[in-house]
Structure formats: C-alpha cells, structure tokens
Length: 209
Ligand SMILES: [Zn+2]
Image (cartoon, rainbow, N blue to C red; front, side):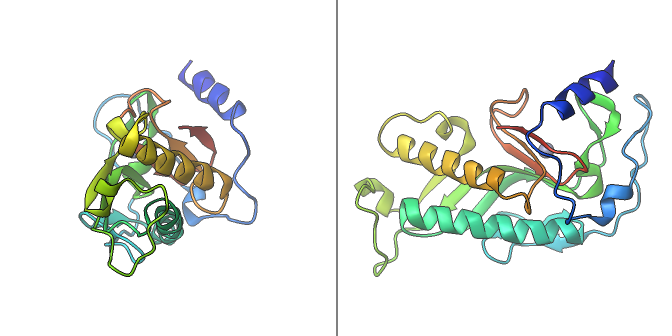
C-alpha cells in the first residue's frame, strides 16, 4: 500500500531526473524496515556553511548535495537582488543530516538520513547597502534589515508580505525549472511542510510546493 502510494506520487511527477546527472547516492538502497531502530548507510558527509550565501548554522551533507546547494544559493541571490536590491545574508533552516525514515512512508529512509536533503525555513536580509539600486517598488521599510519566513510569507497578500510572497514563489518557480539542482521539492502544498521547503536529490522527482 505504501509502495502504491509512492508509485502514485512518482507517476504524477513532472519529469524524471535528467539522465546526465547520475549521482553516487542514486545506487544506495532506500528501503528499510518500517519499525524498530534503523541504521543509515555510512555516507561521507562534509560540514558546509554556504559559499554564495551563508546558512544560519553549518549543514552536514554529502559532497554532491553541497554542489547542488551552491547552485541553489546562486538562484537565491539572483532572485533576491531583483526583488529586494540585495542578497540575503543568511539562509535559515530546520536541519540537514538526520538519520530517520520518511514520516509518511516508513518503509523508506529519509534523504535526510543520507545527508542529501535540506529544510529551508527562510532568509535574513541585511539593510540595503548605500550604493545598491533599490527596485522601484521596494516598500520603504524594506530598506532596513528584515526576515522572510515561509510561514507566513508564502501566503502574503499585502505590502511587504506580498513582496515576500513574490520572492518565494519566483524563487521556487526557478528552482523547479532547473533540473540540475533539486529533484524533490516540497513546500506548503505538501502535508507537514507549512513552514519550510524540503529540498533533496533522491533518485526520483516529486514537486509539490
Ligand atoms: Zn526535509
């Protein structure tokens, strides 16, 4: 039944992972016993603070996923400069490596258990630098430092919150279009993800943001 559920989701996805981006972890089995203690495969992990944009605390991820995160940070920077006139100083998150099952599919190891996933909760922006060109529609209060949070800003409809919603939605649209970054992207549209984006590089593609 669980398998059928997973298959159903896999068959409704938008595209398979691109064949030219085979990752070492694609060959690692994800199936585990649905109950009892689990052992995660021994994957070499690196500590990563973020090269283009810093993470609020260091991540523990596998090296292939770190390379994908660099590309992710570049998309964050580009989108943020367009919307706010500067890049965020930090990406806030709810964790990277964590040896556990997928909550809704206990027969499967979570990609977090392979250091192959990140839960992003928001972004911290510094004050607008003096020489930066502010976008014409930037609300005055956003020339100071501020935070963007998936919850509640994903749903923002007025003023600064509407701009935050535009930033978050534009960012995720660009990430979905980039088949060379993440394969699984879950967000508020997916149960249990009201306050964060889950990004991973499992050997299948699921997009529910
Ligand atoms: Zn996650």
